[in-house]
Image (cartoon, rainbow, N blue to C red):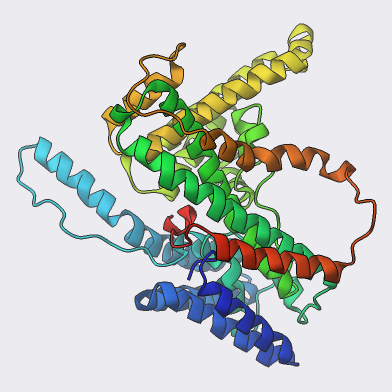
Amino acid sequence: MIFASKAFLVFLPVVLLVYHLLGRRTPKYAFLLAASWAFYAWFSPQYLWVLLLLTAVDYAVGLKLDRETDDRIRRRWVAVSVVANLGLLAGFKYTAFAYDGGSAVAGWLGYDVRPRGWEIILPLGISFHTFQGISYTVDVYRRQIPAVRSFPDYALFVAFFPQMAAGPIVRAAEFLPQMAAPPAVSAGQVSDGLRLFVTGLFKKLFIADQLDRLFVGPVFADPGAFGPDAHRWAAVAWAVQIYCDFSGYSDMAVGCAKWFGFEFPANFDRPYLATSMPDFWRRWHLSFSTWLRDYLYYPLGGSRRGEARTCFNLMTVFVLCGLWHGATPAWLVYGLVYGALMVAHRVYDRALAGVGWADRVRSSPAWQLVAWAGTMVQLLAGLIVIRVPDPAAGETMLRSLFAAGGGAPGPGGVPVWVPLLVAAGMAGHAGSLVRARVRLPVAVPEGVRAVGYAAVVALLVALSPGAGKTFIYIQF
């Protein structure tokens, strides 16, 4: 029951209708919690216990932390939450990776180890709700927020279905104050929610899924059947696909939350306009990158303990960032490469900061264009590494990316609609630069807008080439 499915478009109106018909706070939130657990169970009925267990642990730890005054005991309690969340996350996500790695080492040492013949299916949203649980208990430990007294309130914060599967990672300080009383839903929220939902639905069904099905998937599966131009376009199209897929989910999650009266933070800020690697991570998956900053980078010491320690901290954060995305060697390489790029940029930036001629050059439009192009090439290279089926295919794709000429044409070309879909996927980046300056000549009432957006949702679903493909980040 993904957001882009017909089943969800039946589930959602029913939940909204019942929720808004219930008058008092307790039954409204109890029903919304039950609906959220049902949404989870639709995907992972056998793993509902994971969500319930971690919810109970973090709720209890929060109460203990709030009442306890001894810092040593409080550190032990927060450790219980962190170990419980990360322990289950690691058990589900990294057991197979550890087994494969151990088997490889054992084979190299001459031992005969039986190949892995089993797979572990990840519980829905475990990479996201575990981070929400950790952020809650750590914030209570830091006394930045009080503990939640009501178990259903805390459970709803963890399980609220619009963002549970793939974020944004909403913090307790952002969500719980809005729950003090069921927030009223304004006409503007209804209209804005529909606009976001339409945008996300279009990104997912008509851009991301079609790029993957008709071009990106075939090229990455068999690069030898295509020439260098197709390889380059496939890398670009893959970047647009993953952006439209993930930002599309985030748009729909934020839009859905508005219909219940809740406001979520934005998760993307035109990431493909970034002019450096740090700039990209300030724009991409904002709820995750700021979580890593506040709950990992800063506790490690941030940039307060000298350059060597700062570089080590950056590498640690990005290696773990890579492994959070996926327990594979490719994601480990991804984390190592981006960590090294972050360290290299820091060294370069600090070496030139305050140097007059360098500041003038780096602030010029020509240099900004060069910096943008270099950043995009780095991003495309990293995305190739995590998509290819094997190292040989990755080498082929990377050679084409960095080759100066077109190379041999190959048997597979680039369909004309690929650049059109890429341009459509990137239109939001350009449009967001001028949106604030564009004004309609006639004010359109919010109710009229809402009806129009609802009609567009119905048309998108009816005309969609298919809605069965899950969102990429749900797999993480």
